[in-house]
Amino acid sequence: TERVAFLKMVHAEASRAGLEPELVLSVIHVESAFNRFAISVVGAQGLMQVMPFWKNEIGRPEDNLMDMATNLRYGCTILKHYLDREKGNLIRALARYNGSLGRTKYPEKVLLFWERYWFVRHV
Image 1: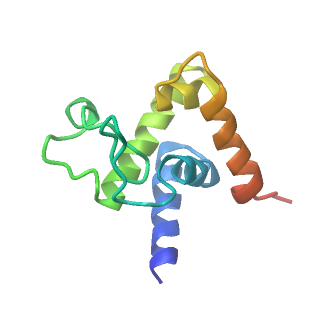
Image 2 (image 1 turned 120 degrees about the vertical axis):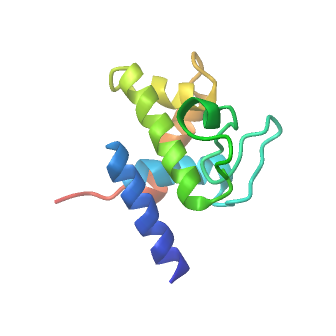
């Protein structure tokens, strides 16, 4: 029941942002290994490892980035922002999301996870 609710939440937020849900699942897989309470050494939080400064940019200071719905909303919004900024270039958008623009290790890992674990072939 929890997994289905989570997948529905991912699908809703990804769709709202105009992203493939499987891409979002791949980002989550790489960023936090689905640990909703993950905190990185630089302070990124939650499933999609959102940096707290984004609360001032696109949200509210009191938003809880450990809340799954909030974290997904932020993460999908940020990823879509970078995808638009990079005119659809997924490699560059993922690198921006990760703060590693100019390097391809992170985007390649996300794409590998997408292909290996989350890719759904639509017939």
